[in-house]
Image (tube, rainbow, N blue to C red; front, side, top):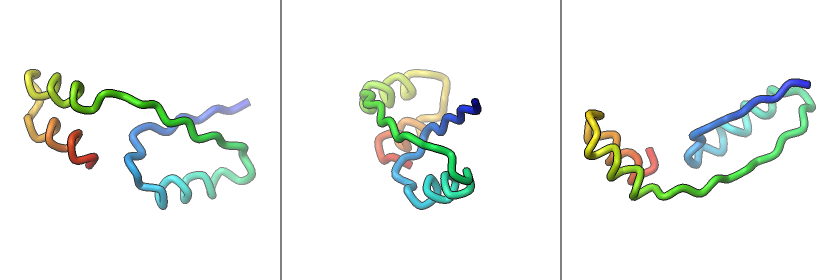
Length: 61
């Protein structure tokens, strides 16, 4: 059995569909995992990472 995981799709449904179309009959399941975006952005903002990353989280880039 082969298992593949796709993370951070962020609303790019066309890209996800293209990847799944190339899977040749493999059964797939979409599982959405909720997370606190604001809290994650705040953690990024106070970290050594560029503040641009926090902005990108909030804007779903």
